[in-house]
Image 1: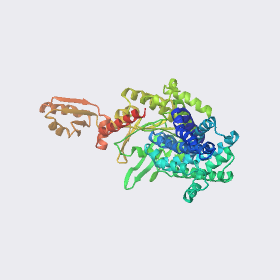
Image 2: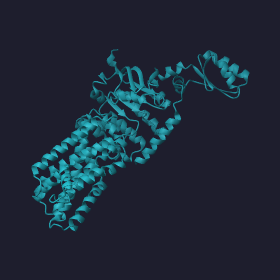
Image 3: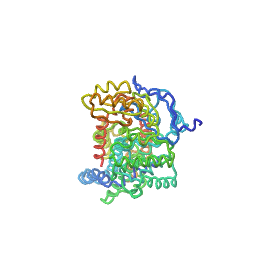
Image 4: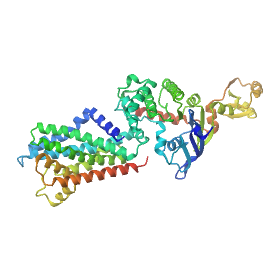
Length: 239
Length: 322
C-alpha cells in the first residue's frame, strides 16, 4: 500500500517535464552565478556545489507538500482516506514518494554540476545518495505537515518560504563556518540542513567541518522525528 | 430469513453535532441486491448518514452493521466491503484510467493478477476499454463518472454508496449511467445506496426509497407503495374558480397547491360534476408522483433552486480543472 502511494508520486513527477525543468532553474543560477562570480576562495565552485544540491533537495522536497493540498482540492484525498489503509501509511507513502522525486531532481542537478566542471568524486557522490534521501525525507515531511493544515494552494508557496529561505541561508551552503558572528554560528549549528550539506561535502569533497557520523546521526533523528510528527498530525486531523 | 440476509443494518443510529441532531434515531435494514434511494432536502442528514456507514464519521449512539461488521469496531472490514462514488469527482487527473483503477486495487491490497483481471472486466463494463491509456484529464464528465463507478467496484465490494451520482451530467448521460447501475446491480448482486436530488432518478432506479427530513426517516417503502399511499388519483385544476372547487375537494382527499389527491376512484365523478357546476374548465387527472410524496412528507420541494446553484458551481469547478 505504501508502495502504491510512492509509485503514484514518482509516476506523476516523471511525467511532469515542466516541473523537472522548473525546479532546476533556481539552483542552476545560484550555482553558476555565485559559483563563478565569488572568488573569495580558489575552489568556491566546488565548495558550494554540495550546498546547492542541499538547496535543491530542500526546495523540491518542502514544495512537494503541496501535493497534499492538491489531493484535498481535487477530492483524491477522500479516495485514499476511505480505503482500508491506516492514515500513517498514507503519510509515509507520500513522504517517501516526494523524497524520491527530490533525490531524482538533485541527481539531475548533480549531473549538470559535474558537466560544469566541479571537482567532485563520483564514488563520493554515489555514497551521498542515502544522505540526500535522508535530507529529502525530512524536508518532504515538513512540507506535508504544512499541507495537512493548509487548504490554500496559492498561499502554500508563500508560507513555505518562511521555512525554505532561512533554512537554506543558514545552512552553511554558501559560507564556511569559520569566523562567523556568534549568533549566525549558533543558528547555523541548530539548522538540520547544515548537517546534510556538511555530510555531502564530507563525501563529495573529502573535507568538511563536521564529522560525517555526527551529521548522519542528526539527519537520521531529524527525518524520523519529522515523519512521526507528520503521521501523528495526519492521523489526528479532523475530516 | 436470517439476519445475514441483510447487508446493511442500522439500529437507532444517531449523530449529534453540538446541540443539533443531524441523524436522529435511524433504523432500517437493506437486503442483498437491493437498490435503496435516500431522499431528503439539503441538510437533512443524508451525507452524515452515509458518512457514518462508511466509517468516516463516528456515530454519537446506536449501532450499525455492514456485511455483518460493526461500523465502530471493525472499520477496516467495513471499508473493504464498501465501494464509494463521491458527490464530487475524486479521480487523479494526471493518471490514466487504468492507473486510477490499479492504484485503487493496490490500496485495497489486491494482488497483481486479480487487479489486471478486474481492470479489464470493469473497463469493459463501463465501455472505457479504448480509453484505458488516456489521462483522466481528457475525459468528459460522464466518462469520469463511469470510471469512478468502475473504480468503486474494483475490490468487489458488497455495497456501493453513490452520493448524488448524476449531478452535473446531461440527461442522456444520466440515462446511460442508470443503465450501468441496473446492469451491475443484476450482474454482481451488489447492494446500492444512492442519494439523489432527482426524484425521477429515485423513482426509476430504486427498489425502495427512504425519505429523510431533519435527521429522521419519515417514510420508507417501494416507490409504488409510497405513491399509492398518496391516493389513487391526482386531479389538477386551474382557473379562477379553482379555489372554490378545491375547498369542496378537501372532503375527498388531500389538497396541495392546485392539486388534490383523491382517496379512492369512486370520488372522481362527484368531483368532476362539482367542477362542471362551478364552471371550472381546465382540469386534468394523473397518477400521484414521487414529487407529491416528497412534498407531503417533508413539506418542501426538493429545494431545486438550491440544487441548481450547487450544480452550477460544481460544473464551473470541473471546467476550471481542465
